[in-house]
Structures are given as C-alpha cells and as structure tokens.
Amino acid sequence: MTFEAWPVAPWANDFTATDVRLQGGIVLLVLNRPDAANARNQQMRTELKATYEAVAASDDVLALIIRGAGEKFFCAGMDLKEASASTETIDEKRARLKAARDIEMLANLPQPTIAAINGYALGGGLEMAMACDFRIAAHNAQMGLTEVDHGLVPGGGGTIRLPALVGKAKATEMILLGQRVDGDAAAALGLVTRAVDQAELDSAVLAFADAIAAKPTAAVRAAKVLIRDGNTRPLAEALDNELDTLLDLMEQHTSKE
Image (tube, rainbow, N blue to C red; front, side):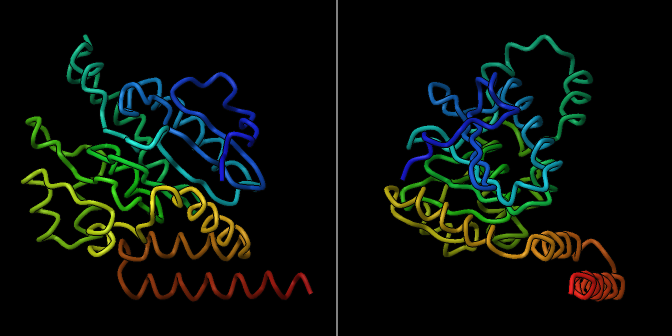
C-alpha cells in the first residue's frame, strides 16, 4: 500500500519540510527531511502548525496519520545543528517556542491521531508520537527520550506523557539513562498500541484510521475530549461532564429522528 497517489492537501502545496496528503477524510502528514533524520527545524514547526490549524477547522477530516519519510527515521527530535547556529537570545527562543507549541496543538486536535513509528523516534520525535491518540510501531523502530545524553531535558511534554504511559519508575529510568526501546518492548510497556512488521506498517495504520473514521464523528470527538480532560478535573466534575456529554449526544440522536 502506498500513499503517493493521494492528492496533496490544499493548504500544503508549498510545503518543503512536510508532505501532507488528504484522501477520504484521512490526512497523512509525512515529516519530510530524510537527509536530516526528519529532525524538527523551524520550517517544519511552521508547517506542522499550519496543518494542525487546517485539520482542527475541518469537519471533513476524520483522522490524522503522522509518519516519517523513509524507513529509518520517524523523527530524531530537535534539529540541533539549526539550534546551535541560532543567534536568538534565550528569552527570544523561549517566547517563540512557547508561542508555537505545535506538539500541544497536535494533542488538542478534535480528530483521532495516529503515529506510524517507522524508525527512530527520539526526543521531540517521540514527544510528537506520544501526543497522538495511538501509536503503531515497526518491530525494529527505536524510541527514547535521549535529551540527557546531549546535556538537555525533554521540552515538549516528554516528562509528563511518558510517565502517564509507562509508569513513573520506568519513565524515570528511560529519561535519566537515555534508554531506547524497540517496537516490541514499547508495546509491552504500553508506550505503543501495537508493533507490526515494517512492511505492514502503512497498511496497518491505514486500516486503523479507516476503522476510526467509520465511527460516528460526534461521539468519537466527544469521547476523545472526555478521555483527554478527565484526569485534569475533580472526580465529581469529570463524572458530571461525562454524563452531560452522553445526554447531549442522546438529544442529538433524538432530534435527528
């Protein structure tokens, strides 16, 4: 199965760091810097933000898939070469990165999102994947928050999302030691939904996206919000919100009959 025949998304004709395709309500977002390990540079972040804005505003987009170009890298994280060459002050860099927060835009999309982890997903690359609702990885993929090896720490939600997925003890081990895990180990830890053969990855991810897209859109989007926000509210408030959402959906069904 190949995505090359899919048309380019209308907002992405001039993109260079990403390749965005749209077909049948499914958006395929390819991180397209294979010569730089699909690392996240400023151009990529700008294009990611534009895609997330377009997807969030669309009633016709039913699911989003993120993949890295090629088979070796999903995304190696921050483009350290670009970052080291920057003449920005720390305050300027802090203001720019806080204003962008494209990973949080991904996490907050109303549509279900799936990371197709086709190779190395390190640092910010893994943080992007963890911001998705689902992660399907190749058996030979390698995942880790390796910033400590460079004298840094995760800066895109890694210290928050990894403990939520694999538990605090294992997340601490992975972050402080810069540990990497392959697709099978990640599946056992709960870091990814499942691991598949590299040759089957695209087909498996598309089948997953099609299955989600076939579900009632309003219910899928409402359930995603409840899951995302449930742990941030007091229990009684979360339960009331869940019930209110159910009753709203029931009312919508009644009004259509």
